[in-house]
Image 1 (cartoon, rainbow, N blue to C red):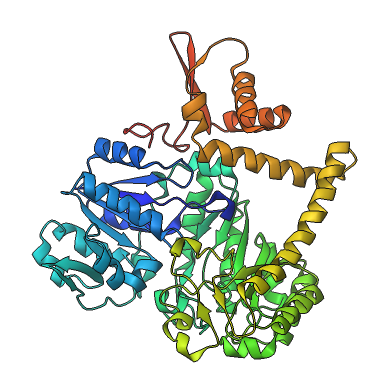
Image 2 (tube, rainbow, N blue to C red):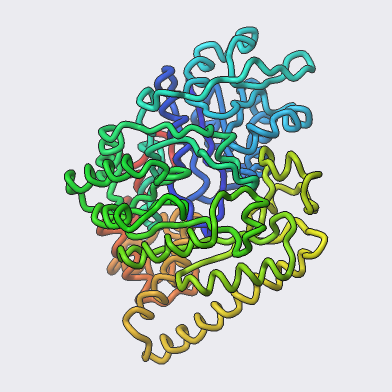
Amino acid sequence: MKVALLATPYPLEEAPSPPLGICYVAAACETAGAEVRIFDYIVRQYTPQKLIDEIEQFKPDVVGASSVTMNFPIAHSMIRSVKQKFPEIITMMGGPHVSFDYHNILTRSSEVDLIVIGEAEQTLRELLPVIKDRRKWHNVKGIAFHDNGQIVTPPPRDLIQDLESLPIPARQHLPMSRYLALGFPVSIITSRGCPNQCIFCLGRRMVGKKVRHRSIESVLDEIEQILTYGFTRINIADDLFTADKSRAIELCEAIIRQGSPFSWSAFARVNTVDTELLKVMLEAGCDTVSFGIESGNTEMLKRVKKGITLQQARKAIESCKEAGMRAHASFMVGLPGETLQTMEDSNKFAQELGIEYGYHFLAPFPGTTVRDEIEKYDLEILTDDWALYDANRPIVQTSQASPENMEQFVSKLENEQKSKWNEIEERYKKGICSPEELFQVEAFHRLDFVYQILSKDMIEKHTSSMVHTGNPIEKLSDTLAEITGTNKDLALRTIKRFVDNNYLRNKIQNKAIHWYWTHNNRIDVLPVSNL
């Protein structure tokens, strides 16, 4: 059996890691005996025709797609395209959005055959061996599907208690060379579960309130495997890495003993850290901790059941500074009962902390308490256009705060940051910027250059076949610099690094040089072309 998994397009500006969930799904499918391909459209350009061509080449029996709310529309359109062209293929979807909106999706879409609800690994192990016999779907827990015009939902599946039963994520199916070129960290989880009750979050419902930990040994093994791909930075993507202080310290001490050189970051709550823990994390290579503080208003924190106090936030930031740990705080705009004053409270508190911070707009995802119990709150949801649920724009309003109020509030900070950045850019152009500013500006332009190359398939479209004369790397970088409007020296340094690290290679045929992305440092290219 062949299974094609679609890594749905996701904005590169949102700094995506190599998708972790789909690698767990791929590993589960392989455990069930399937031959798997991941069609990654995050670091490759997506077009409907490319998808159809690649499906036609691979000829899968099953095509699956996972998504969060903001990219559900494109994921669904991809599944629809596959089903319309290849009606014999079984189509399925999974992930947090469809897990809590499956009834609406199946009601409105005949192209989605089934939906995997919640944690998918054990479900897929049972489902794939019987997937061609729809009568047996009724016996598989944790799915929803069409049957004779009805939507069938067998009993829900319990959460996986033994995380050691999970195979290592099958990252070998991802185009790792492209992700390494992009330069973002790779994600790993050391636990599943969130004990907190924030009304705007899906964590508790998706992975349960009880934190389930992986063994220290399995985490270390996965870290070692990640490092062999060439990554030097990891993001620990647990809902709450610091849920258990003693366990976090034990893992950090094991990382220190292992001695592998890499840096990492993690998410934490302000009421779960202290100087002792942060110092051990720092020694183990953690250089950044992100806190979701959400609001600088005490009543707002109580209303959204955040379970923290402003004093705890102050203390956590003091502990980070004492430990030498970089801290970042995120605040949310548009929470129930938001007013001009509560937004200003957040602004004052964020500035008081004296650390990096940013704002996101509330996105009431399906499955969140705030959406399910909207009648309890001073909040109005203005749209169900899921593509707008990226937390980068206001899609709600309260009785005292309009979308315009919220937009103006966030824009003020963004304009201040933009003004500072323009000053740095101006100093850069004049050649009088500091070494740190030089690094920042070149990193920004380098990233924009790489965005364009990846998202528009420029290697494949413009430089896959060039006349073999002169220095091929210089010719390649000059071509890409001209197309993207990038400084030629910066483009040359970037492309040379890609070639030196074997992300990009070439071959010469008939006096022409053909450039291509390698798949990863284990596989040059996949058997099916252009995957």
